[in-house]
Length: 254
Image 1 (cartoon, rainbow, N blue to C red):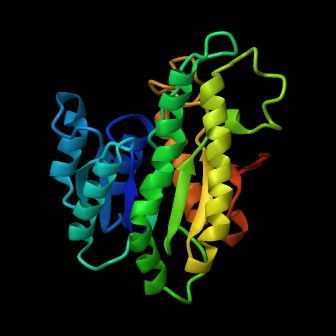
Image 2: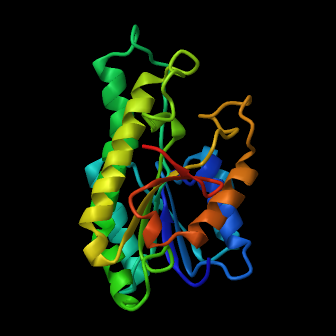
């Protein structure tokens, strides 16, 4: 992806970890990768810490995306490491799902899922906005792209109202679906609100992937999904602002 600085939420496993792993192995890796997770000191995150120990451009940051204070503290830490430079790319990857449907879903389920899948990405982007604006200001003549300044919200096909009509009984995940539909709306609003600042905002469907969330029956490996995602990120431009695009680069309906 070239000499840029980026932050990825939920970097300790699944798609988030694999993004970090593949990025550091690129021929021209990013200058700085802020890999965030809830508790860097946890033994469960040893894999991420080991990766960071081998690659000085990877900085592990504590970030609980459902906690406004944690987001502010993480932003301060990122600012110290940026040392006056801008943040080119924010990938809001952290997300959760529950097996809820019209019969069993309740307010607690909705609030938990929305807190992580919608409110978290909103607050993280809002807090990091000065750094994203700074990156855009560093390249005023550059067109909208991930190498200039961008917010990528990892969404899902299941949040597409048009594309998933009729499939509710196959995979209800009611609160998850609704949260991703709301995340798509947030992306559209961000794309319009931040365009004047030179920030590209796009929603990305990573595919049905073999992760803790996707399950073993998913057709895509994490490696395959991330390979596609990185190619898509490299290709994004102004025409992709405020849309939902999948890991293969195909535009998906809202």
